[in-house]
Image (cartoon, rainbow, N blue to C red; front, side):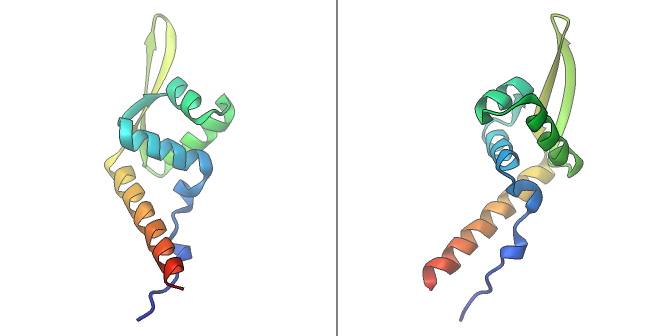
Amino acid sequence: MTRSFAVNAIDTIIHGKLRLGAMAYLASHRTASFSDLKAALETSDGNLSINMQKLEAASYVSVTKSFSDRRPVTRYSITETGRAAFARYLDVMSTLMGDESEA
């Protein structure tokens, strides 16, 4: 029995390079500051900001803003919705790789 090649099941919100990296980072760290993510993902402020807004709009991450020594601090946390979406994403990718290896 042949499984379908479910390329259309890939979550395009997560699939972008920076968004995938941010989700993977947050899945293992639970929470991270904007600065931590920027350093880990080796990207610019603007690029990270745009990509995190997309994850926030999908309810995959939550954002907390505060101040530390009069400096703004933005922290991101993966939500339950985000954790479930990331698990589904990994399952889809695993399935796609399994389909390819059966050829």
